[in-house]
Image (cartoon, rainbow, N blue to C red; front, side):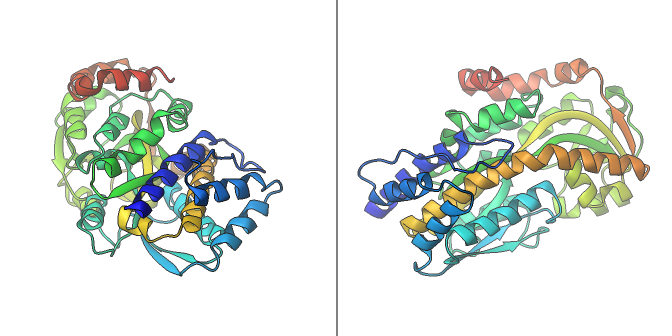
Length: 374
């Protein structure tokens, strides 16, 4: 019990530190965390971080602290390829965890959906047994797994731009959202936030306006907000597993789907649906999560290393996301993808008004706080 309390206190304290320092440039000296006086391990980790000074110095200190701890291998699931924004974030996080733990933690990164869809991965993680310890998931995927507040991050047209999202991700609300599944007893906790760009619709046939979506079968995950959004836009929501989406587009089971731009290209969807309309209905908010079982088997020094790596990985994600997305968009245009800009999103927002109101009613004040962060 004591160990779990200490781990939870350490996580909560360091999550705040990890998120408060997000920026576009990796700092020379990581932000210092004010640790609870009763938690000597957290205090030691914070002192080591504060003493970091020059780049690499704190890395050495953290690595030395955890280097002689028992060796641990953590299996990490990713549904997307490693060349996506989230895949690059995964790889960076893996590198930093292994470096900051002095090699006592190894991240076994399994990408491209080899361990199943996000829901498959969550079912496995919450089922126990330790076959999957960590994962990068879409924040809204936690809605049915004890993270009800994360639903608010997938409400259509909530975030007006990336800065708006990062205002949330570095706010006092972020740790509350990250730790909600753990606090609800579901057995997982969030480590840090990132994003994979705004999500847009792509289709087999050209779509030049909202009206062109009418009657189209659009792939959705089994998510009530996404279903409601697609219905509001006049299309027909069709549930298809992500791993089956390419063939579903190829065979006409669905007429289109939605993804962030980088994922759209990396998964070769332009081969079967070469029309992209940039409606930007939601920002692809992501979390990296770990099971409580895996967290509790880490030493305090290893937990500190993981949280420091989380801070750096969140910063890295923010730094690369927009640049990578813009580069991919230009590549798509050069390769002949039909890209349509949406200059007036008001009709799209109005079409989604019902699903927004229905899904924010229970958290009206909290949702308004997020909206007001723009």
